[in-house]
Image (cartoon, rainbow, N blue to C red):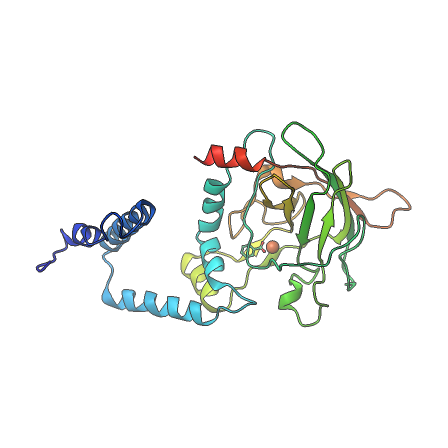
Length: 290
Ligand code: BEZ
Ligand code: FE
């Protein structure tokens, strides 16, 4: 096609997509929508060439700092509310089921496998408050899910995840637990504190460009998995933490707020948190998504 114009360029590019059989229907759906929205956005803001080069340079710098310790594109997506939107579309919940929320960039696979009731705390901080976290994992009918696994991770009282802090032991405040025959789990952790998402490099530039702060409310991360159930990626938020109504990544849900109560006299921890999870059967989740 010659003589591409502002008015026909979108149709020309969409029309250039591979024929049926060369690309799948899903590829066509994604690319048609992407091209249409991208062109619409560029026309909407009257993008200058200098701005276009600035955006290319920004993305190149974001890619250059990605490593096994830093996934800059997830961070950028989080700041734009993209991860939480994708999560809500991919994981619809029915009444009574636990809500999911963003995974974030700090999960590490294969955390230490710990017995029920064990502590994830490998290093004590002066200002830490220990918490006994316990509850039940159930299916949608209220039946216990025995043998469910719960991966948990959180930041330390200095606001840093262990893999971003050379002064914490490997896998500090991370663990994998299993429910007992009653679907009960228990572990010891520390009260999570609010922290700023990494705001150096391109994530910080984007926050600044948007006039946003980087802070997240204190939260514990969980991935709860059981045979035949959809893995639940979620977080529990401290009811008394700051930033609950102004999370930098828009991931707070009312149903995920838990109360950290003072532990009874003589308990081994300072606080107690009770929180139950209700999992969705894998097949049901697929049907609802369709
Ligand atoms: C987190 O909760 O670990 C997180 C989520 C999104 C962006 C940065 C951190
Ligand atoms: Fe986090």
